[in-house]
Amino acid sequence: MGALELASATVRYGARTALDRVDLTVPAGERVALIGPNGSGKTTLLRALAGILRPDAGTARPAAGLTQRELARRVAFLPQEEHWEFPFPVEDVVACGRYAHAPGLFKEAVEDHAAVDTALAAVGLAPLRTRLITELSGGERRRVVLARALAQRAPALLLDEPTTALDLEHRHAVLTVLAGFSGTVVLATHDLDAAAAACERVVVLDAGRVVADGTPQAIITEALLRDVFHVTARVLREDGRIHVITEI
Amino acid sequence: MSSRRSRRILFCCVAFAVVATAVAPFLGQAIDFSSEDGQFIFFRLRLPRALLALGCGAGLAAAGVVLQAILKNPLATPFTLGVASGAAFGVVLAVVLGIDALLGVAGRPLVGMAGAVFVIGLTYRAARVRGHLPTHTLLLAGVALTYVFSALILAIQYTATPSDAARILRWLVGSVETGLDFWPHLIVGAAVVLALCVLVPLGRAFNAMAGGAEAAAGVGVDVAGTVRRSYLAASLLVGVIVAFAGPIGFVGLLVPHALRLFGLVDNRYLLPAAALAGGGFLALCDGVTNLLPQALPVGVLTHLLGGPFFLVLLLRAKSQTV
Image (cartoon, rainbow over all chains, first blue to last red; front, top):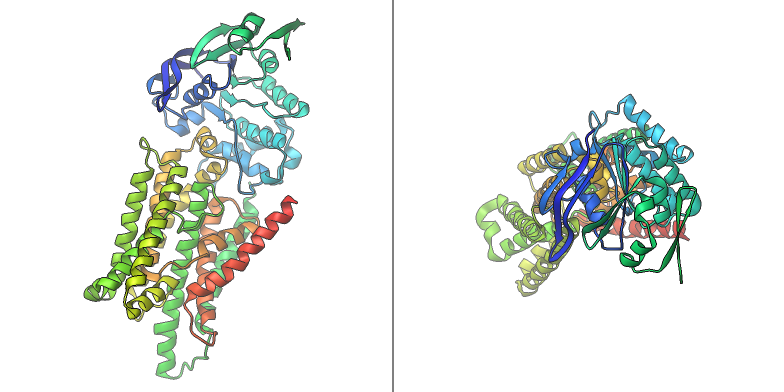
């Protein structure tokens, strides 16, 4: 598995430029957190890396030149929100992660079953495998779709706000799963504590451009929070961890 | 993963379709097979009707599953995207202008199909954005065109002569009476088989799309291609069926939801199961119309059953959320 890379990538939504000539290389195995205010381009950057959208200018690798199916074997993407209208059993939702590997319409290989079982166990949802996704809580649903991404067995995992709206227990469960993942991780998040805990590199986006890039210790500072997020906050550093406390 | 249960339901649907189509021609006044009249009624009238109902019901139910899957909307029907209104407009126009009489028995289906293809083209053109077919614009374009063509149909019906208005009304109710010809069966049957050949292999992609287009693309689905192929196949199928049988309502909504109530949501199985159950259901409904004191087209019966069924679904959903 090679690096994930954006080269001078520009994405426009109508007249608005969501991503402005962004260069970013994520070497294999690295864990990167994308942070920045709402509308700064985090989701768009993840979509471009995942091949969900094609940049209007510049390139995204390995997305360029691969079919969606080929790309899904290398990169798993978890969107910010999903609404399930139809009552699929949890195990069927997770099995969707095997789409790119499936040998046939009705055929499922032993490996497909194993991938689903392992992914369900990893997120702690094995006991709920026959429950319907429409009957689960928001936190449980989030873990189900995380299991689907794990079932893809892709060497890179791109996650858009994986801990948003989760209670402490579910947030902890998701972060534990990410800590146990051995491949590349790129996550877009507003949870700065989680970004610092789960990733060794933080990339800051503002108005569609990369404005800072480095280790959490170097990047998450009171000055950055003031200049980019426009808040007065204290950054506590304790045993190598970072806690952001905003003042009201 | 829950495929054993899905397979069982699919086999039940095969049995239901066979039994329903076999039983339907026997419903109504008893047939004396020893007489020539009895044989004529059974083999030239009732059996062909049951077979055409099987084809039409299969196509409408399958199209219902597909449109609900690609629009991610449980309330979508085969007629949501305006295809039926286009076909109906073509037929209604043909009736008042006398084109159907000029072209003979093939006239009505031909203009119906032309109307359907015209609306499919318009909807496709209106909804297309940068080579993609976003489902929300597809839905809006389809609904807008439905309103336009429904208004045109009303205007034509309102200004038509009483005899033309009556003929239009009879057709709009929906019926599988086709006279003594067999070619409608061949065309509808071929359309159903061809469309299912395109649509059934997309079942796994439809499952992934239940979580949304981004989620599906994330696991490797070519969402744009899937939407384009399935929209065109399902719409052309609906166009053919409506051109022959009129807009027979509720089959495309009722049958998929009934199967979901039995726990069948996996589109790989739901699609063929709905086709079989929809065909059997429409054949049976058409047979039941023979039992009524006053002969009524099957479209009336499907609506009569569809309304209460919909209310049951609503009450069930309500009881689950309270």
